[in-house]
Image: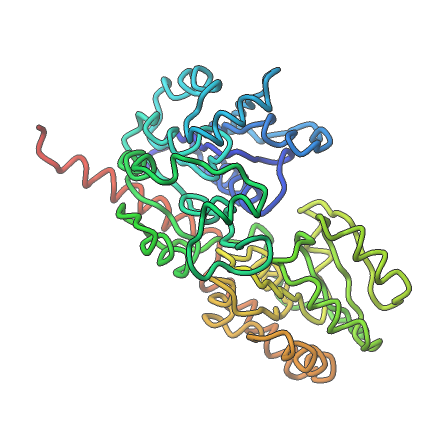
Length: 406
């Protein structure tokens, strides 16, 4: 394939980010640049700083990646207009300036605060894509987490928005999303679960399941360790199930737990478990350093209660030769069921026995670790992902070229 010109659009992008969607967007942009393509990434510093976040570290992008960071004096007003209208509002002119350039592909990621659905029709590229990093298109909370206390069972979106502290968005009850998506050639879903949830929500545009990949290289053999050490890496919020995990470990001093991450529950949890010697907390670790955190762990635990789209932590841990223990929630278990590189459970009361079994059974750990490494190489290799991704783009472009002109 000849070199292409890409424009990727994401509300958050390192170092101005909070989670996996931005990390994956960066891995895609830099991976395309290494393959000889020209990449422009557009993101919002305004959205990042809305949460009173500290300024990001100086951004250093590799050759082939051009960064366009949106920042203004009216960050709060601009974001409020987007949130309420589902349209670019005050950033339209800046976005129009970018989109007026010639691109072969425009790829939208999380666009909740960089234009809303109304940004999709601004693409003039022959191929327009959107990755469903979460369920924002049809869920105001983004994560199908209802009333701040449980997974969504039936839609009661207006009352849920109020209870979740989110101003109701009138555009969600009209045809704005459907009309905007007409400009998107294909949605890329990281899991079969989230693809199906979007179809059930009424999305009729083509959807392709394209699981994420790990930017960590796959180790040939796992790092051995004599100590029992489990790792949790993620936001400290109710939907992630961190409280269930801490309760499972707190009364079992033989199970050491390292918690990496921060969030609204952070201060209370640190205070509650400050005298529990076998539980340690680390507020934040640079993504590039997480491979050293995972290395040698007995297992990485993903106890999410809320339905996950695709837990990037799962394949990153597996690439490090570490088994993963996953609660069945949304698409989080798909990787384990596909590779056999870990264990899946359904209810919190099942978790302690799984952890104790992993801690005591070295042969099982080695078997799961081997399956994890092989599984990542077979199903989640970076090279394989880019081959599939570029193949989808060529397929769409060829289909359009073959259509008779109106």
